[in-house]
Length: 322
Ligand code: PBG
Image (tube, rainbow, N blue to C red; front, side):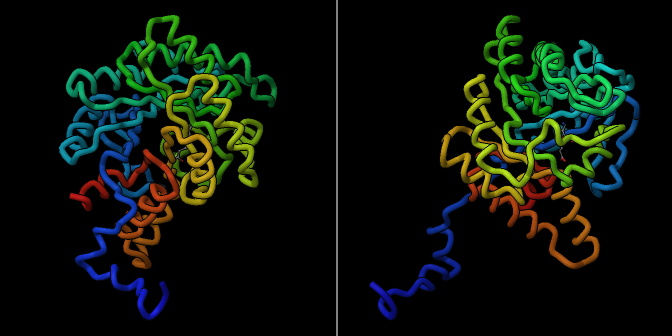
């Protein structure tokens, strides 16, 4: 059938459009990031991420409560500790900033899904995601530290741990550490295809995780590649990842689609800090309608194949969807 009997516009009338809509964005798709800072006593706005705040430990449960009222259910925590050293000791401190925050959330909101970012960059004095020797970021010596960190998060009550450091073998090390301590039901969401990206700029202010030398290109992926992302995902699945992630999201929709098509496993995408800040900046200038743009971006990420989206727009868009 073709024109004039076929008319694509027939189904575009306002009352018919919802019937043929292919992608539905809901609050169930969102994971809201929370920055918890051990060094502050009241919320502190992140200057490169307007509208986003670091929270003191005792402010976290409140924020989760408010978000849950809007229908949000899942949260990913990033910690800013008061103490940093060469090997990131406070990452696995039982009374560390994330461990305390997880406990405070789970005390009040058992049903909140608590995910913890497992990485060393916020906890090391040099800001790299692994143990350092000279100017080299070492892979294997980092693995047991990640295992210990994941276990300490699980002990505090985390439902899912999310290793983001792009160390080879990190998922295996964490799975073994969790299982040997009896945490067989704690899931792993691996930042499997994480690119060395300039879109993380604002996060490094937010999490105080900027590095003192070099860059992250010896461990994070080269953004010119996407076959490599499939290999990364395959390896993490073999090592025991339950959910895999592509990061960033907006400029990586092709990668999300390839990963989803090839593996068909629960796939998360991280709509990162720089993607948020660009929208906010243009909104501030009056150049774009920021809420509509954020909504369109999130729909695009879902349409590309993401089942879950970590996004700083979570609250705003939850409000829009209500
Ligand atoms: C830690 C980590 C980073 C992000 C999430 N976990 C920063 C980095 O790798 O440099 C970035 C998130 C964002 O930009 O929103 N490794």
